[in-house]
Image (cartoon, rainbow, N blue to C red; front, side, top):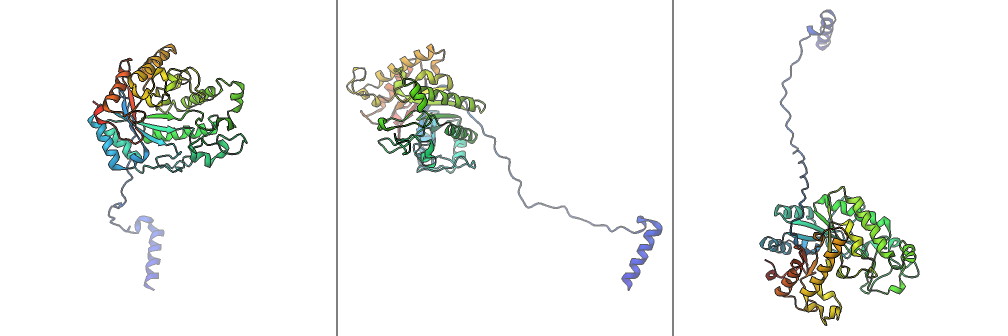
Length: 378
């Protein structure tokens, strides 16, 4: 009953005197303190410019995924004339070496994945080390299983072709796959890689080449048996450049060492002049052990690193000039592994001297085991 009387009196006062007649209730509120930490702003990705000269070593994704091993190589770079490193982005098995939220870049295959790749690249940058990402392009056993319709086929036009090692290839004319490589390249650059290095940009070899069929390239090959393969690759090179030029990424390509002295396509589609316009750096693999017996009258070319590499550099620099380019684009891969001969510090220094004596100053060292010869480095 008391509550009703109070309500009635209050209502009458409101009607007679307005809202102000009712004394307002005052509240004292404490400030609200959030217990949720603010989400930190993502660190901006910083890219380094190519050092002049560029001198680097190759690191597999498996080594990059092994902290103790990769730290040894980082220290080697810090302690010597080295200033760059080449790390697998996509290896010979087709495995992408880093995790991505991009559904197009599913990381399958039998290779290694580096869980902290972004942080590792950032660490390298903090040490002023230039980071090059290597992408194995058309050799891709993983993707040929995922998309056998894009693979190089056997003559029956159905079965996936494999080389003598059991490795399969994507048809270099499969443009849908070009988009996959472009997407991977863009994602890699956003991760922090300064340069994108394209390897296995070629038609397959080392297999039964009489039992091979190219679903997407065959018409061009039939129309021009001499240059058809090279024209397919040239179109791919142009596609890469056109789709990546706005990213700011530096682009390089690995080619067979013979492209420096041969003018045909080596039956794999690689011609030096067809690559020159589309890449910032050309990286011929001039490993002396890979030249055949009797090359340039040497019974064992691996025993003559200076002569083999000097000939390659002299020829390629002249061809770059003739193509209205610059010899500074030439950045060869040098041998630091025992094949054909024991590659001592002296042998590797002869390779380097062959580069310098031809007016060049940049090179990369390759050892598939990632065990580099410290005594060969200044």
